[in-house]
Image (cartoon, rainbow, N blue to C red; front, side):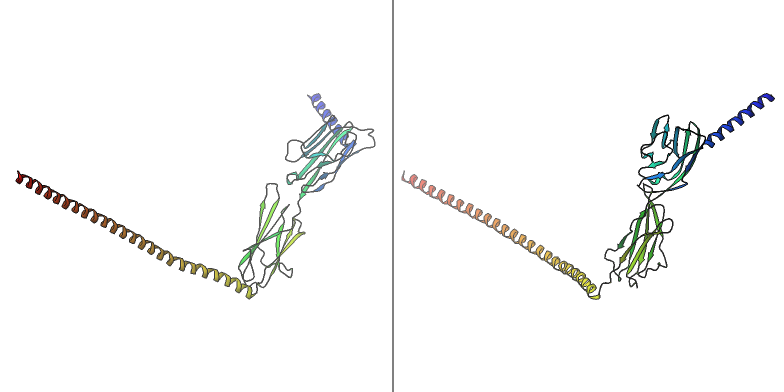
Length: 324
């Protein structure tokens, strides 16, 4: 029993010694923090350092993995290199003698953000180290959308400012003297499918405002200003406003006048059509009545002629009888 315990202790000591020796001969130095630009190349720097005792070392295995992802993003093992799309060694002509095992991400996305582990095994020992990638997307120049479109100082309305970037920043409004707006409106945040943030802020404007120019500025997550956009609310002169109002009143008056004219015309037109139909009906009735009268008179004349012919015939017969 004692011999078995001694054997286990010996194996543990030997394993610990081998592990320490592997780490003693090979060291991986990685840049702790890396910042990658969205849709640009990102390089995660890691370099192998050997101790003086190592001569002509050769790399057997290199594995790059990202936290939360089961499959390695890049793996070199016994001369065979495999990688996920968009990942490669930073050195184009890398081989198993090259101590620069840095990882290159060709088109950085928000999802690439996280902690990466580089594990290296050589014929002289092994080691691993970690590095972190943070992704940023510079916020673009904001857009300002007025509501209504023809807003002026004598109109109630609003200005909506929007800008897209990463990580989450903020929007702020400033007056014409570049002083921060006292009552800053709430900033709404919408996350897109590619992980970027759309910031939106709506500033309410009341008619008669003392300011004619408003500036929207976007700040990144560190609080640095990245871009700004100004909007000038037009102050239309009374004459212009009068002309616009006059044109509107004229248009309304014309529409009302047209309604007043069209309605009587329709009524009169309907009456005229009705009268024409009535006259046409009366004339047709009279014509039909006259035709009937003529037909009756013709029948009467024909009857009288028959009687006279009969009487004449009768008289003739009577005369002939008397002669006999």
